[in-house]
Image 1 (cartoon, helix red, strand yellow):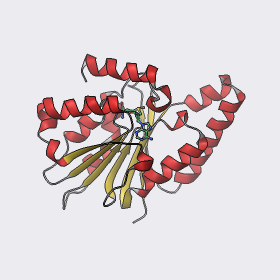
Image 2 (cartoon, protein in one colour):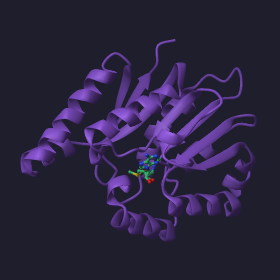
Image 3 (cartoon, protein in one colour):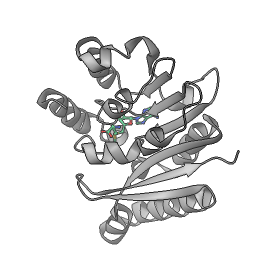
Image 4 (tube, helix red, strand yellow):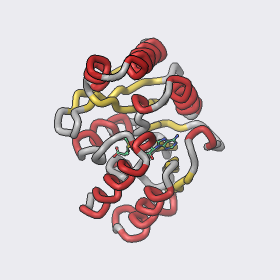
Length: 214
Ligand SMILES: C[S@@+](CC[C@H](N)C(=O)[O-])C[C@H]1O[C@@H](n2cnc3c(N)ncnc32)[C@H](O)[C@@H]1O
């Protein structure tokens, strides 16, 4: 990722903290962990892949490098400044340009995105901890609705952010984070098949990998 893209990310962090949710884009180690289910996916046929909240493309690059001819890749991003960065990348970066025809960027909130069919691999960068509980529920059910039976859904959470903010944050924030934690744990208890620990990221993160019942 170029310095200009890092600067663009930081600018959006300051401008739209609520939706951007982090000061820096994901590291390549986090991107690799997030895309592991795509790497491991059997390929008897082309795949449908959805990325939610691609930002400046830190994880997108890793997805693009694994796309095969015939795969369909949709990206849903709420922030038009990030969309401009991504479009530029699909036009100017050789590896991305190769996959531009099979990739579509949708500039809208996930809640408004409608697809023609569910996806084999869904990868989400949504910062759940920044959102009110009602929005987390809305986004989780919108995301899960795009996961095909037997398909995977991967998302990351910054390690211990909930515990740290719960011990130093305001009471309302503590209650919100506790509610999010118990909602996510309960909602995905039966579908989680793996959790990766990624220390080489600012801040370190867990990647949760879920599979929908076939
Ligand atoms: C923590 S950043 C992750 C960016 C990138 N995936 C990465 O790992 O560096 C969260 C991203 O989600 C996007 N986002 C937040 N709410 C969204 C929503 N409701 N629908 C679509 N994208 C959203 C933000 O604009 C931002 O690009």
